Amino acid sequence: MASHKILVIDDSRVIRNMVRDMLPKGNFQVLEAKDGVEGLDCIRQERPNLIMLDFLLPRMSGWEVFQQVQASAELQSIPLVLMSGRREEVTEKISEPFEFFEFIEKPFEQKELIEAIKSAMAKARLPRPRTAPSIPATPAAGSATGSADAAEIAALNEKIEKMQVEIDTLKKQMMQLLTFIKQKLK
Image 1 (spheres, helix red, strand yellow):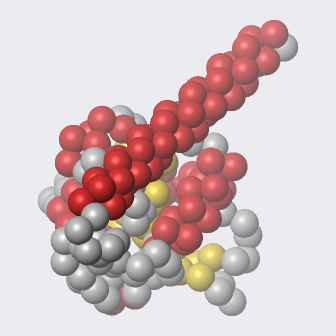
Image 2 (cartoon, rainbow, N blue to C red):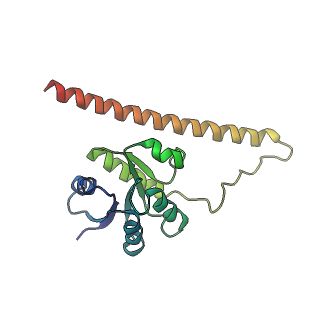
Image 3 (cartoon, one colour):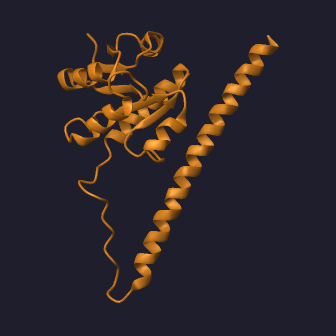
């Protein structure tokens, strides 16, 4: 029996089948939904262990499904992998770095899919703020530089995360280029 339920919400049967075929055999029960309404219903009924969500869907967009999932304390703990053929579609609505879910650009390969799933599972375990992120307590009384330092560190950490995303993207593009060149040389 499958130990994990993975819900693939995508209007493309090709993508749904591709994800099913890329997953290790026997470990997963793959549930499918072809639009956002069907996907959200399935999330609520089946409580999958992982959601693979296309960003552009009929009836209810992936963005709307994402918002519904994130608004529910019960559902937001489910690991989520957003999929899209264009990263900018996602970043228009959700700024990077993606803190609580993973993003994978279509088309993707099996190794990329497995890495995205692992990353989504790790990110889903991160504690979430109940409201807006709180500002860390100031150090010693009268020390105004402590909060300025904390803000500067936070800004630098954000830049580092963005740079890491760019590096990962460049690595991915380089691997795709190498694969393409190898295929052409055959």
